[in-house]
Length: 263
Image (cartoon, one colour):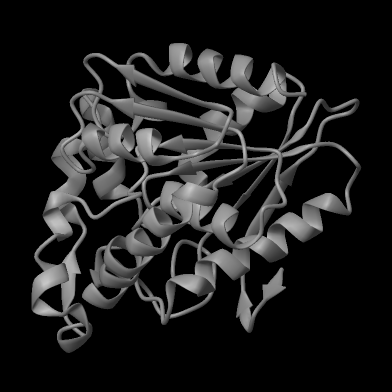
């Protein structure tokens, strides 16, 4: 799809007699192909699943590891949502992981037109690793690149996840501080301001051993969120990527049940 001046790589996995439409929004420095097993689970359970690569990521166009404004990611997702709504009249749910979780929060703040959100280890406030950017002014050093390898040890207890992450040619090897600042500082502030008017049903899921986005971020965001339909689930012995943990089947089932209850 050509969206807002960028060629965005979108895949559609459509099932006959579907129950609902799910749109998966991936995290920073990765791509939608890392969610094939998530797609398969929900597809096999009767859901249409749509994935896409964020601008500057994976097979999508745009400057690698960069974004001019966090609003670009929100508005790109809006075009995907509008497209999905042309497929059928069924409900639309967003599943966002990490930075993708931040994007789906921002989306609700701006558009309010989906039926539910699943927030997986979302950077809905500034993580400790990025907090220094709040004080030094990331716009001064936005041109600086940093390696994405720093996260590899903290993704999952499954060692294969680290190996696959580092060897995946579509994962970003670096990202600009501009991207991190836009999403983890300016974007996080945008999210926090929006929580008092949040209306969409939302499920928060987070691993208790997450050292990339601390679980307390989801816990505090959950408490501040004024949605009348909100649930927080935390998982023992789980790091950042719940969908790639040993307990992933439990996580999948929890997400599916939450969606089905809102159809």
